[in-house]
Image (cartoon, rainbow, N blue to C red; front, side):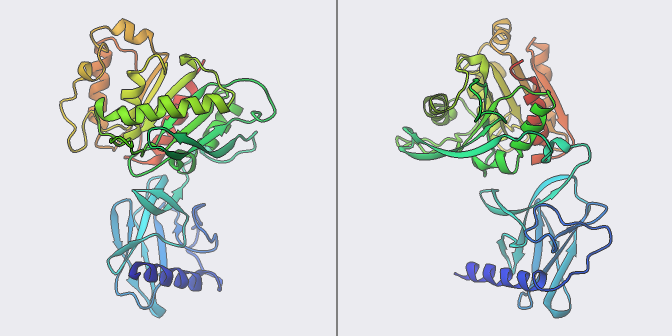
Length: 386
């Protein structure tokens, strides 16, 4: 009740501050697309620092928690709090208001599910990444549909991207099954990840073949025990593997015009979803011939990950490499260059290549964040189904 009251108070204060008077903004600043009120705060300055302003006369202390870095706001005349952050790298960044010690979403910005809660976000565009934006090209469609899970014994959501022309045509399409990270769900790739924009622009430019993209919620609890995330082990992946292969794929293949052979299926994901793609994708060659692993921590760089035994985790990858390679059309890994996982990922890629494994790898500027994962999908999609 206290949290709700505080959030309501902040909301009313923000509206009072931003909705009923003309603002004077710093020169050359702009309102990010993630703002609710395009004539309000936060504002991105010309050096990519961000200026926040909150009207909260009764608050004793307010901070901005932006990507894990906390900035103390200064109280000014009339109870208006302000702060300007250090310059931010381009991309998508979660943030929260911390009002008298309580972390809440900022009602001035769009709220999305991330970090295991509803979080505010700010988007800073990156030059040269027009494929992440809506362009004047034929647009596909994103639908939320529901399937019955025999694993969880309940109805569960999927978000499905179909390319432009799907509704009018009769052709069948290959499918990418794309997985979110820990603390997110099926909405992540379609909302934060901008999957539709990326696919629309790539397909329109002839850089990717038309394909369907399916985003499932891997946070599934089996009625017989077991959680979908499962940890980084083959055994831990069995709950979600059953959900995906026995429930999600059959639903998609029954309800959408899709190609049903292994070469027309791909699995990819970020972080936790990258681990799922590694284990399920590589150890289910009868289902998937294309696998993308983005920013996984299983190789190292996170607590509990060490001494990764490649051959043990994927039998045959080093001992029967020729057969392993023959089962995959595309095997792709990626990671952010400032991500603690990067050196471990480079090391495992080096070991794979020395063993003869045919693996593509790329890294991009950035930490464990959505701009890296958008670029990962952008590259992976261009390799697929050709």
